[in-house]
View 1 (tube, rainbow, N blue to C red):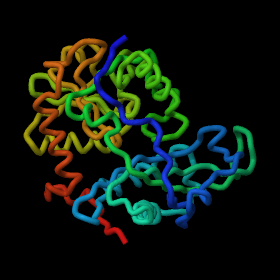
View 2 (cartoon, one colour):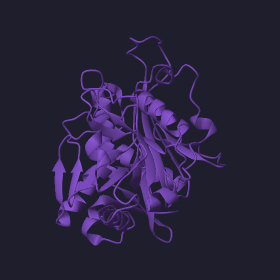
View 3 (cartoon, rainbow, N blue to C red):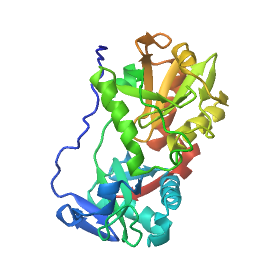
Length: 324
């Protein structure tokens, strides 16, 4: 069993007092946000969600990163599973809800979880008349894969679980029930001493990690699976590609298998929660020098400069707000 020195971030968020949650247009306390036990999405997993980060850019001033893109993807996910037909909140409503949730919890820096879900009513797979609810929660969350993981890199394994294919799931939707496969892959990886799992598809190509997109560096080129494969269209992924192109780095979107990944010069994962996390080893094989590589460090630093408001070229991606 591989023993990783990386201390992963805790899976559970510690109990917080005075939590405020946006529910169907109103800010309520945690008690007011409790769901009925017959909430349809709780039983059957039909729901859409997003993970969004805000960063403090000045004392008492926060900035939500690519909020517009996240809400657009949330609504698109609802459309994929027909939840949009009864969704009564607009793009503008959900955008404002995210900012209001951060302000209500006095978070200039934090993580947001908007969820669109089917409420209580009829039970059974075919229920179509249940109300569609919207909820936004927010909390303080540090490095998803550990602060040390951001610096030194993490150890990954190729999972025995596959990423579901286009014929079996809606791979471009960020949907609650679809994450069971990722949960099982993550549990398997952590149980075997790794920090994260990377999933193949049915053809044996690298797709993504349990909650992150995958990049590798080879011969000074940045390579990542194409959007036509069964991967999520990650917003941090798109950010990396644009940043790399702006810096003159050649970006190639193409399929690759585990053997190419083993022999990469560098590997890193991207995601709103994971941010830009280097991978130092896969299946016990060192990647490059077994530490964060120079291109990973360059893009990682560039990413944190953007989200913290230190790079004005990308100011359009920041939705700034003041704490009350």
